[in-house]
Length: 327
Ligand SMILES: Nc1ncnc2c1ncn2[C@@H]1O[C@H](COP(=O)(O)OP(=O)(O)OP(=O)(O)O)[C@@H](O)[C@H]1O
Image (cartoon, rainbow, N blue to C red):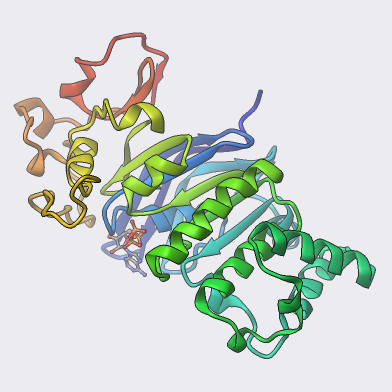
């Protein structure tokens, strides 16, 4: 079966003179119904990648190379008109500030009408019925359709933004830190809803977060980015016990201890590299406790091994070697 999303060797820069090479050579597939979590420290390129997959990148960001295919369509060459259409019914995006994307001078109901009418759905009753259906999925009562955004709490607005993103049954939803702005209780509630939601209306998801603990809990697959590159990808249920990349291991060590959530936990020493000049070396080498000479003189490829995709010269030797391919 062809994947729903295929990203091949995607590279994105910010600026033309002395550019920031924010995303480099990223290849990624997402299957229909698959929930992929994308994690990494701040500045590693998660949002840049998510925006580019939705073709929402704006100057100074520019895609310098690579291919994006979604649902059999080439997203690099789609006309602006086709892209506008596809953006709601093939792919929807929910941002951290999704709630702010609601129009303050329109009722919630009018906003559902707007989106659906623009995509050829007609009939007041049918539109309202669909709006009520998706609102129910995020546990919002139909009365909100008559309300304005300023009358609602942040948590409600964010849930409405999620419901709105689902109203045209998209095949893929990209969520970039969709609940980070909310308090922990509301966050958890929304994420529980999301899980249940995918059982009612299956869709693929790219869920961007800096919170590995959350992603391990929610996602089927975890993709770890470091300094603009994918360094590891594996099933979430195996990653906690067996993370291979030293960076993923450090992220896991820095998770709060569930037995002692208020206790101190290990940060990752050092800081991510400057992305103006890319060395011919492992980007993590300066912070890596396992670094060897070879790591400082060649860029490790992302090897597709038995149950993990891994970009690490040292740990690649440790993984049981049933090699699939390498990129
Ligand atoms: N408008 C911009 N101009 C120049 N560089 C930028 C711009 N936006 C982002 N960058 C750089 O691109 C890199 C990737 O940023 P990006 O926001 O994609 O990371 P992120 O992993 O999503 O971080 P966060 O979790 O903080 O949102 C960073 O080095 C950042 O400084």
